[in-house]
Image 1 (cartoon, one colour):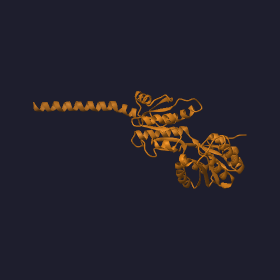
Image 2 (cartoon, one colour):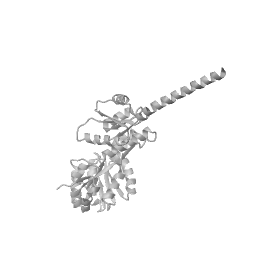
Image 3 (tube, one colour):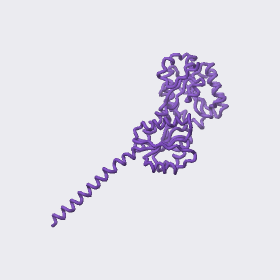
Image 4 (tube, one colour):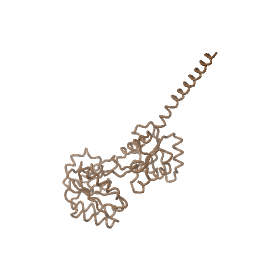
Length: 325
């Protein structure tokens, strides 16, 4: 009788264990699938800006996720709207793009794994401690491109505003040294001071082995007055101008280092994947990094004027060629 009871107990335990294993096998694939299903939130805007976000989404899809859902948002979209969408789709994490996407991310950061992107870096944005990648090219990408395209350059001057971009200059100084360049920072408190600094640099302040790096900072550069002055003086004085805007290259700057939007999307996807696996930053100091996925645009007319005609034969190395006639 005792043996029969023992056998019955063992049989019940065996059946229970088999049932547990069966349930684990049933739900494990669903869990894995959920961990590999993410979303992208982007602004509901028209072309030509929509294509930027479409390219970023394409890049996220290349980060080896099973599914990538998308949600176009307006300024009326709330954090609760995004949270509800995320729950309905069963998303493990979300890539939040654009200014409003970043605002929504601040409200969602405690309960939704996320990264932000396609925003311009600022001191205020850095203080949010949200993980992600800004649109601003990393100084390393800028200087790497300068050395590749114009290897004779030894010094790079930059006009900056201490309150808005002082933090960047310290980072840029280290990056310049690592690329064998000397950074010449020229501080200014406002546009008037910035203009005086540009005048000094463009009228003898830069030697033949120097270049002028333009920051995308409205405190030191405006497109209506200062930019036209810089481009005209740079042409007259044979000064090499580097920017992060293709539009500046169209207007006469030698080259621009600008975002590779597909590459940015892939990097954001990998960053989110690392966070979901417990290997990436969920936030904190320096969680928001600058852009390393970049392309280069070159104005061949300006290159010829500066004695860099060889760039015409290196067009395969240039992503965007501006060749005005």
